[in-house]
Length: 122
Image (cartoon, rainbow, N blue to C red; front, side, top):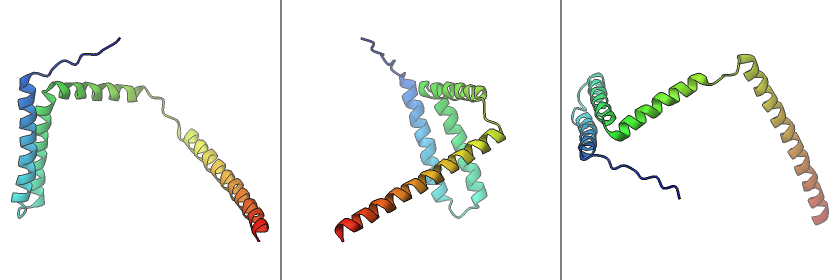
């Protein structure tokens, strides 16, 4: 059997997640409390708190794993061979044509079955 044992996070990670939750809570409560202030200033405050919460979250084991995943994903996206504009246009036109043809075929079958059922019933 292949059992993957998950390493337990250190206790300091729990404290860091609590700090993140508190920063988010301060942002929500502060935005409500200062609702009379300019939206610009409240947005700046929320951005500062979000950056601080993100920084603290990235210091945890799960945060580091997320940062590694994001970095690897970005590297993988760079390796993708994206289609040219001409290939995209041709593929789109083929899909539209096939959809229209299938719609006409299904409409014809539906009409034929409706005609047969109406002859049988009435």
